[in-house]
Length: 94
Image 1 (spheres, helix red, strand yellow):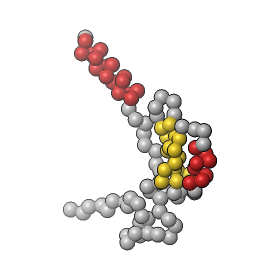
Image 2: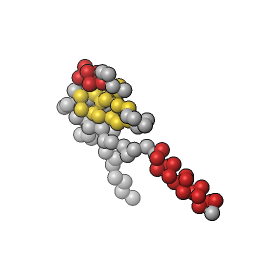
Image 3: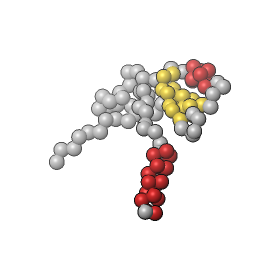
């Protein structure tokens, strides 16, 4: 009985403390806003074209601006035609 109670407590705590599902970062915008929310969670919003726009939104909030690692300047593509940043993995053929 003690093992069942302990296992259910671990499952409940894991569900409460587990990080939220990852949000996709929009590669069309170079600047993101990371905003901390009540309870310790945070969200990232990538919808800013400039640092000044992001800073104006972040003012007075528990937030900070950061560079979008998936953004690629328009017209720049890598050798495979994929934008700079993370490229799509190439499927393996065995």
